[in-house]
Length: 221
Ligand code: HEC
Image (cartoon, rainbow, N blue to C red; front, side, top):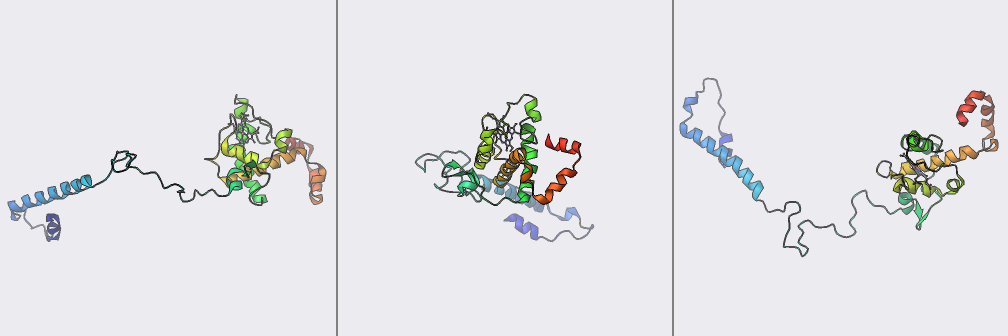
């Protein structure tokens, strides 16, 4: 290992150190060591026993050097045992319950996500008058038709997860928890259309009559 010896040599100490003192042989040795070092490394990396990607082999019966994962292998974080949480279904049928209790914070998060991802087509109220639709995208059903009012909440989750007809899947952009929150918020939108004064807690009713007529008009649009 010529280069090791070389590194152990004392470094030149002062400016007075004259190159001529380094013998011709010494300089040749230095070059040889450098060449040996560089080419040695390179050869070592090139000659190691390995398969390049997609390189065939005779070692395995199927001729592939790349081996498939052992059957049943699940990548870390990819375990999907909870059918309801990950598919919106129970025993294969769309479920009509949430996998976790929905709190006010969940609904607020659902509203935020809905407004970002869904309102461009379904609009802020769910009547499907979003700007993309106004510019020619196929018209989705309003959330307020009887069929969707009666649809189990797992249906909304499944539509977001898998897409539906012309609507593409949002599974890669919205994680399952947020898909449930959006589904819950769709229920809020639906309720907002059919709610009566009797649904408003008595303590809150006073606030409704305090609204100016214009404010009421804007809200109910
Ligand atoms: C780019 C426009 C677009 C966006 C954005 C969009 N959708 Fe849709 N959605 C559609 C269209 C179009 C349909 C109707 C598809 C069809 O019937 O072929 C639809 C249908 C639906 C339906 C009704 C399914 C049924 O049973 O009739 C639901 C529920 C729905 N979307 C929810 C959502 C949610 C939730 C989001 C946001 C995560 C979302 N959509 C984002 C275009 C969109």
